[in-house]
Length: 117
Image (cartoon, rainbow, N blue to C red; front, side):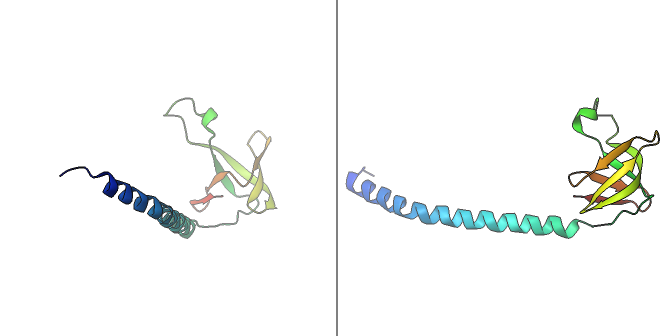
């Protein structure tokens, strides 16, 4: 097997011509994978509407966790007002208010439903 410069140049030009097609195909596959993952996530999501006076737990923020054995949920909180679009206002036992908005993850104590927004 000897190296032939002309053949090498031709193969390199052919590969460069095919590069755009390969990139296009990779982009299509990535988009299809993204849609499949989104569909799978959405199919597992169980929407629930919290009612006033429901007891809920709120997922703890990373800065609230002292170590890996710290509780992953804070609460319980009682829902005092539903703002719409999955946002709620809750009250702690010491009567201070919290807001549970869209990005929050709530765990409903009454029916063991996890709601992720």
